[in-house]
Length: 335
Image 1 (cartoon, rainbow, N blue to C red):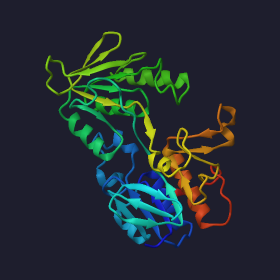
Image 2: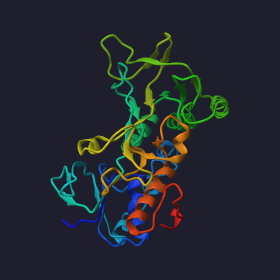
Image 3: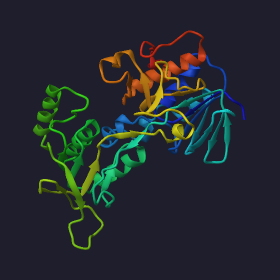
Image 4: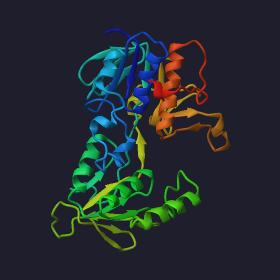
C-alpha cells in the first residue's frame, strides 16, 4: 500500500493532524486510524451536554463523514494498530493489513485509571471517557437515584454537576484535601467547592474508598454503596469513577521508543526516530517553560494542547519552515 502520513489515534489530536495536513497543503496520502467504531467525536461534551441530553451523537462529531471524503483522509475506524516496524516503515493493524508510512504520528491518547478496590467491577460501577461509556452512564442515570462520583477532578465534578441537574442525589469522594488539587490553585478549589455545595452536591474531602459493595452477604452483583476507609458508608445505585488517566504507550514501547510519563519527544514533538512523532495525551515533550520544575519534559492533558500539537506536526510535514510548538498557531475554526 502507498506511504504518506499515517496517524494512529482518532481523538482530537489525531483528527487535528489529519485536517491540518490538508489545510497546510499536504497532498500525499493521509490515513487516520481509530480503535473506536464510527466517526471521530469531541470528548468534552460527553460529561456535560451529551449526558444531559442537550447534544446528540451527530452534534458532538468533530466533522461529518463527508469531511473525510472531501479532504481525502482515509478513515479506518474500529481498527487497532498492534505493531510498528520502524526499519521497513510499516504499521501492522489487527485486521491483518500492513500500512506503509513516510511519517507516523502517534496520537494514542489515554485510558481511564482503574480504582484498585474490591467491588470495582460490580454492575453499576462506570467510567466515562469514551462515547460508549457516556452512553452507559446516561442510560443508568435515567434510573439511578443516589450517585457517587469517586474523584474530584474536572471529569468527576462535571459528572456530578450533570447528575445533580437531573435531580439525583450526588456525593463526590475526593482523596486529597481539596478539589482539582493537581491542576488549580487553592482559591479556585474553594470556589468550586462552594459552587457545587450550593447546588446540593455533597463533597467529601480527605476521603478514600475502601470498597464498593452490593449490600448483601452473598451479593446481588449490583452496586449498593461505597465504604470509606474511615468507616463511613455512602449509599449508591450508580458509582462513576474519575480518578485520572494513564497514557497509552504500549505500542511505542514495543517499537523501542523511549517512555517516561508518556512517549518521549523533543520540543518539535519528534521521537528519537525522525519518522515518528507523538502528540496529545500520550506524549511527553521537551519544553523550555518546564525547566522551572524538576524536569524539562511535560505531558499535558487538554483539548487545546491536542489541537496545537496536531497543527504543529502538520506544518512540520507540509513545510520546510520550522515550527516550534507552542508558538505554532492557526485558526482551527476555518478547518
